[in-house]
Image (cartoon, rainbow, N blue to C red):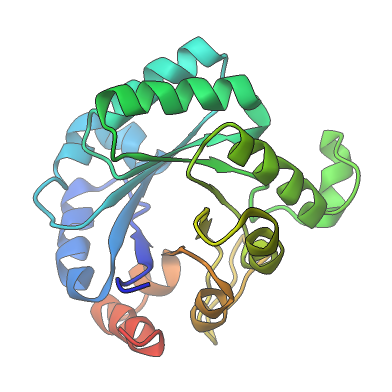
Length: 231
């Protein structure tokens, strides 16, 4: 990979703060991730505010509904100029295909990826939602379904990177949250890994939030991570 794989997660309701933070870390990251918290507070106008930021935007809304509804949402999301949007793989192949077709109708360059198992979930929680086997098993099952639907990649934890690379090939996008540099608080994440280790294992994009955004000096934190990755 020749570009910085770090997408900083701007998980805040404050648009001005998000833009200020983005300006500070921009030289040291490869993109921005805007999620539910940001979107509910700021809507499409908030996403459009990043059009001039000069970096790709991953709009992380995790659509999960009937195919027609998800298609409409994906179409609207792609129209905002986003580089990556996502759905829940658990919605099934027809739903994922509907999202992909709708997004590509609007923006052929927008990547559509699917969430497999949330990185906040550990093996012991899966039986409570009717899933037998390990998180790794479920991630691989859903990733195969995602690839069969024609999507560009999946969101997974760092611990599934090696298995997914082997099973799905070198070109399938692996977007990895739960990245925690040494000494960082893991917070509500269960399946975590350091940035250099995850990147070396084959992650396409590293989504990093609190270790940058809540650092005493976010610019330095972003720069240190970039340097640890050779960027």
